[in-house]
Image 1: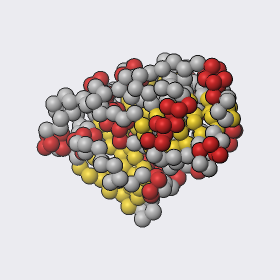
Image 2: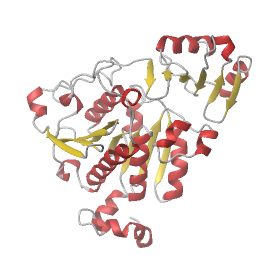
Image 3: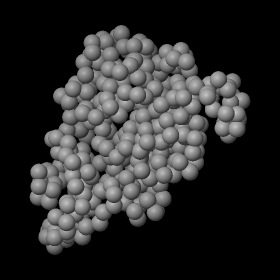
Length: 356
């Protein structure tokens, strides 16, 4: 239990009747895993660290770039200059905000092979991602482990948020049995994204997270079965009652135990990164890459920069038809190829320079 002087920083929060001293003490004992630390994840992580959640694991596969700074509030130009992974940069900033919170940054691409180990010790899973494949995977592991999660998304000026409490509420597949077909839904590439929209929907997610975490049990939090939809441009706020979907749809996931994403039956080796003109390429099996050795190998192919977390290769434009490509490689063999949105081109460059 925390001492009085440690709780003093949360005094105004404890005055709120929904939390109180007992709720705050419960909050400081909770463990959260946040998957994705882009625009949504920055707001969520900042809010929960300031609120005093005891442990937060921040998992993200990406590094900080200049275009992130418009809406990703934990990062600075120095993080861009140092090519820091987002989870590391976020942890560095958040430790300055609240030294009482244990923050664990993880630089990794979340997939079916590692998601259980990343989440099984958590009280709550939070969605800070930008793609449906990972969200369906989070939904699967939430149902499998019985850990609540909160689905959140934002494009353009609008966002949506929905809590999922296993065995007590509808899940993501109750709402959408299958991911939307490619090109059928807006992305930040096609619709852009407003920083204030991120702030609003992520703040709603953070408030919902705190409500769940201060409750003795998730099902006792009194969370209504609703999908919340917000548009900050036309100032609209709508809620859809989805409390009966679980029974009405006879959901294959939460009613029948289907775990397509958790078993690895639904996955892709490449992912086009939203708003980045980049593609992530993942090897079929996890690797253990020696960054110094790879740096020496790649130095003959172009300009190489590196830190303890990644290597970046800038390829000469004259060798690629006047096109500018950058390949960023992580220790697990994963790479982000910048300069194309074509998975075939990205895989070709990966094979050519990484050699697998």
